[in-house]
Length: 275
Image 1 (tube, rainbow, N blue to C red):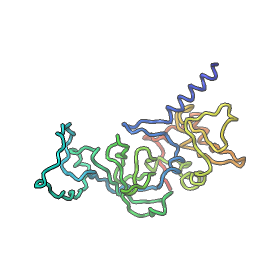
Image 2: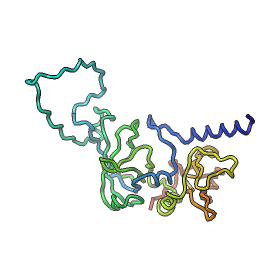
Image 3: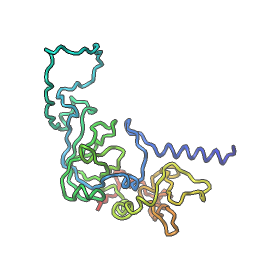
Image 4: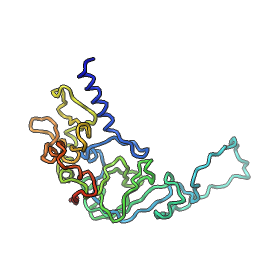
């Protein structure tokens, strides 16, 4: 095996590592915003109005730490001891301050949000409406626990039996951190190419002529410090029929390391509102 083959194998291994991230026990595949948009059932911009916790189980006296128990062999009870099961207690929402005596794994979060704009899911969610969004209350179970009241966010998610649901693996970001390219993608670009182009993470084509015409290879951080494609590009079909990344001036500067680092969320990042 020659040196060039070993180098290619090493690059493929790095690409695999870069496309998988671990978040406090919740494993998420790194995805481009366009992938998030296309795979989500709803995409909205919303302001968080309230944040409450509620028990998943009906009991109101869950132990702070579950204790191991040894159960005796089960025996069918005598007829005289049979009783009708009592209906479960009504679950009452808890504030964040009341959560100290509860295990987050036994809870769910409910966010009341004011929807400002709907990018996807207009059939179910109306702009300027108030809706509840649920999430696991434990980040280790992929719960989104960091949303703050009064803040505006871009939220992507799915619909479950509990209603609109978000997880850590979804695209959840403060709205002022969404770049201009991403805003244009949300409004005009992402949806147009959902069924035309495929974004494949962790793929390197060699030689370059072996590239599939419907595929944009996505290798964030492999050659650059920032995810330039996510911040400043989208996968589109060219007039030639080939799907490729848009090459914008900001993407070029990002790839050269020309002062584009702050847009990834630094405290001095210039603020933009998603519109």
